[in-house]
Image 1 (cartoon, rainbow, N blue to C red):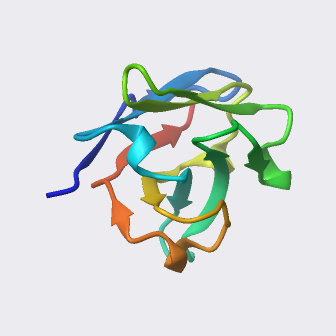
Image 2: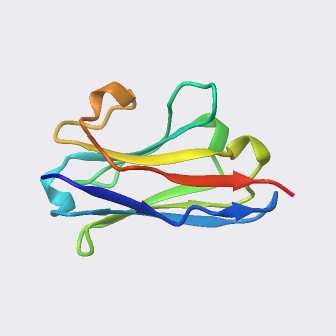
Length: 123
């Protein structure tokens, strides 16, 4: 059974930083793309950043460019999301997801999902 486990979510003040981790129960090399998505209350799930497992090519949403960085560590079967300069509008449940095909950004194209981790940005 495919499993992804997210960790690192927390309550943080505006301007603060968090590092989220997504750990796969199998090798990340079993997938071609892994992404981070988020969903705020009352809003649709949106892509934040995705990475090609093979070559490290990335997608980063305009709303987080220059603040969030995605990285993969295939040796540790993890994909991380470093989040800096956090804003209240970044508050959401953050999910990692994977697919066995090329990197795309549509959440419906990712069949394998973690349970999510809550990020709250508030003073």
